[in-house]
Image (cartoon, rainbow, N blue to C red):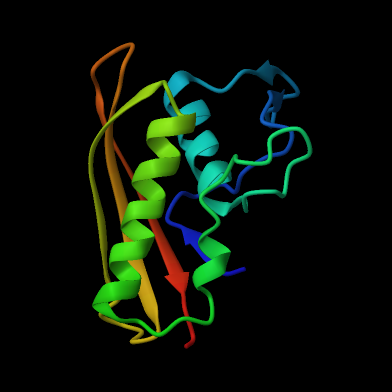
Length: 132
């Protein structure tokens, strides 16, 4: 699967604290926790997790699809449905799925949301290579 995040650090697994450069344990803040959770949700296929068969958006299902308006609409719908169902910490403002200007076989995904606890607007940007 080729989903690229514009964040500097990859998802850590498990989604828990880890020691920093000085050896201190730091727990991720709310923003990081939600962002990591969203990236995990989008990259997980339904039926991939035991006992959570419906969890995930399954963006890998689109890897061999053509980069068309219809496919981008299906990606958008899949993201909206998964986030609404499984990420209760956010209020989804909008999802944008557009053709990547630098790569005709890729799409840019931007998820704009607000943290329910603080109301702070956040944005998660991903690139998904389709290749169809």
